[in-house]
Image 1 (tube, rainbow, N blue to C red):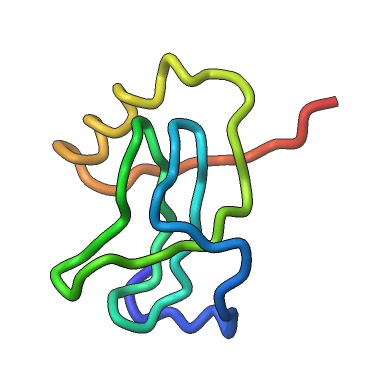
Image 2 (tube, rainbow, N blue to C red):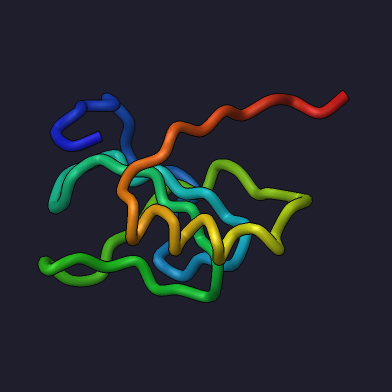
Length: 86
């Protein structure tokens, strides 16, 4: 999301996310971005440790997260759609 200004501050933020957590880093020291955590992690950049707003947790499909992470790493950004379960 680069330099996109979300207008958001930090709320429910963490640097230590777990598999299935989705964080929004609203920008500041690094670029604005979503983090899809597919294993235990510590969120950081060249500037040091960062914290993102934990706003969503996947309840199903954890077995696909590592493959998704590798796909993004080797193929770049991917289109994604979220839907609300019934």
